[in-house]
Image (cartoon, rainbow over all chains, first blue to last red; front, side, top):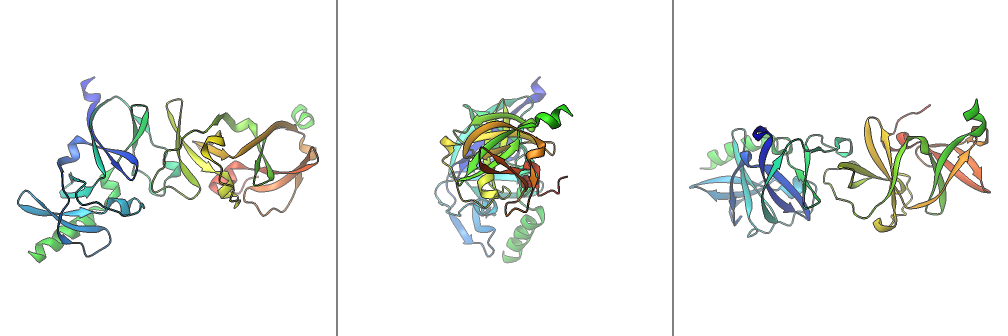
Length: 152
Length: 143
């Protein structure tokens, strides 16, 4: 049964709770202070991370939510494929163990299928799992990192 | 033939003072709506999700889709859960009026300004628009 166990990080964005698998998580940063501003609407800019800088992506804008990022609210640093990037969250709520098969998200209502693959239940409330690879285009993230190298 | 004589049961509901009816044959449950989880990146007219029997049911706002801006208070509304196109869909209904049996011979074809409506019936002296939920939700041509 242990193969059915997973660990997820739960955070809130604009009043909704979301989760990612801990396997995608690198670190939770307490601050999202920008080193430089982004030059396109999907990127807020770059933040310092372990002696380097990584893109801070505007997840609220990507989700179609009002983009009111508070830069001292913290951000989540993740690895998706080869790309390392961060996105700001309103609050990190903690880590939760989940077991077995989760409730599938009804894709019929979504403009973009596969963005929220599952729904977890936490204290009787829905938590939407986030498929970061579906949400953030890998070519776009690669472009941001190439752009950074050119600017170095 | 028996069904043709006795007709089918319909859920009759009111949106902005106008009466609509959907066949009750496809409805699994009618539940009160206390809370809707908002969901980003949703298609038009989908208000969010509600939990029902360990399932997440998409909430489709019938009033908005009909072009009738009678957005009800969530606590006063009902959800008629139907299985459409292989998915459970909850039709958000502001005001349930009745469940009534309507004979097919009483139903007349009509031109309608409302999407998903191609027929109407006179019920208790009131004009009721017969709504095909699948057509409203998915924009399909239904027989």
